[in-house]
Length: 106
Length: 115
Image (cartoon, rainbow over all chains, first blue to last red; front, side, top):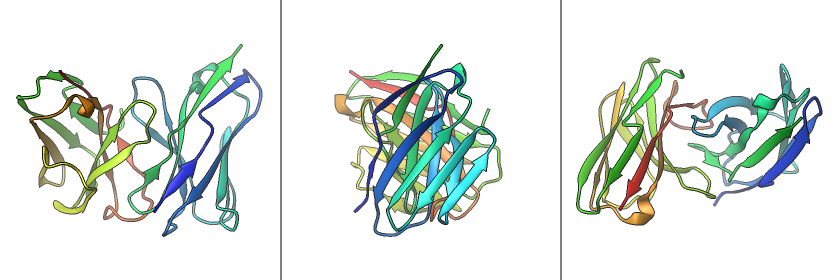
């Protein structure tokens, strides 16, 4: 089977850095993906890690450690518009976590 | 705009009604998906179509019936639904064959309420 664990809520201050962790169990590993979803909007792809290490895309970075079945999404220089839900996803045809609701405060 | 369009955006139906959700992708992708998103639950994969052939059916009740007439269109036919089926139904597409950890492009979803 497959399971994912991520924190349900995180609050951070504008301009700060926040890390959203994800631990997973999956029978077949096809990489770890991250998606962002604003209230009332569609999930949008943020990042993918197929191998161990850090992937950087602008203010967002994602990290994977396959030996620890663990990854994280790092958001730097937080902006108010980053307030959204963030989902990690693994496996064939993408099994999603329950999501982390990030609230950025002034 | 992600290139995946879903209609209607909102739908209210009774338990005896029959309705259909529509999804269209303008990206030239090969695979299309239906996901269900309920409050406080993870996105649940319902169906996957690759090149118009169903490749995944995730133990979904028969009151949900998908149809993929071509690689650009996907429907979800609904009949005799239950109140617990109320949720956001999301369509997605990907470039590949619908296997592996592919980059998904989601539509904005249909918010369904079953009375």
